[in-house]
Length: 177
Image 1 (cartoon, rainbow, N blue to C red):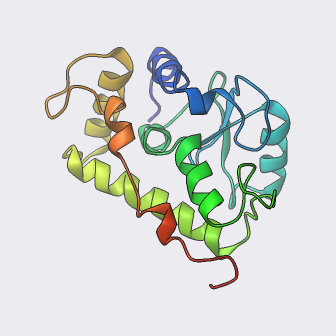
Image 2 (cartoon, rainbow, N blue to C red):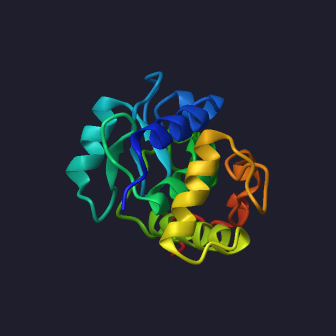
């Protein structure tokens, strides 16, 4: 099932307070209201259109205000965020923060590796919080959004800064895959 709209709104309001999520991952537009669940990144309307054109197999785009979310999609956003993606892609020589100015190639092996790292982080954090069923996952998302105390942790979204992948420095050099 989907999480209730009030839970979605509270959840994304909290995540969008992080300074790195206040601008589009791809450009400099402020206050993005669209996301790529696939990469856990925040996008402006224009860049979300570009991601939609890539196809859902490469970037699954949703509106944080209009669309309904499954709990697992919200966990993906909690473990993601623009800062982690910028750091990873910058170390790989891509993205708006890299020195070359090379855009992220969403068909590359480097990007596929990042997508896989996001998936692993989601699975690890479901284990960390002992989430075994869809119901438990939905309850955890609701607790996070409503700021109620959880059984295992005060607030998993606040711990999102601790959710990490391998060091971006460990990412393979462009063209080495």
